Image (cartoon, rainbow, N blue to C red; front, side):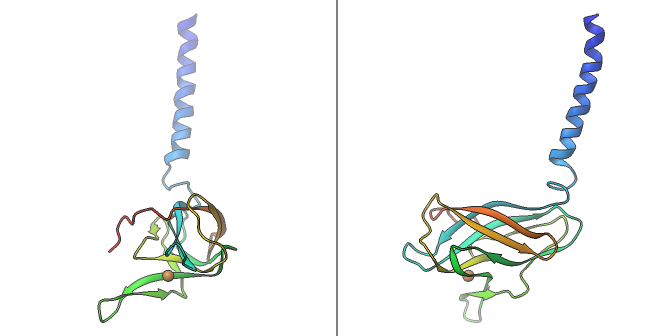
Length: 160
Ligand SMILES: [Cu+2]
């Protein structure tokens, strides 16, 4: 009797495992959604009036998308910046009016020395461990509201 009832149970468990696997690791990262991972913010220096936020965007949707704006009450003005090397070999920050493109199914990483959300005119100091609110505005995905942890000591992974 016990042996017989064990077989259907293991089949049910296999089906549950299969379904949960599809949900967890399906064809896209969280299928159908724009995901924001590994977000952190830092001040340019301890007394600086500017800072920056970094994160990785994972476009799990079927559409090419674009981060077109960022909002937060922590700073007077937020801009989408990237770095470009000028004729003298000096890195210059460039304001991207068109924002950051994230193709369908692709990732886009904001990182030190590259693309970043510039926080201009900080309304309060960025203290390590504090969370700051950040709203990201996408062309297709709409608004994503997140909390970003301040980490002034984080080392740049791929800074030039
Ligand atoms: Cu900048």
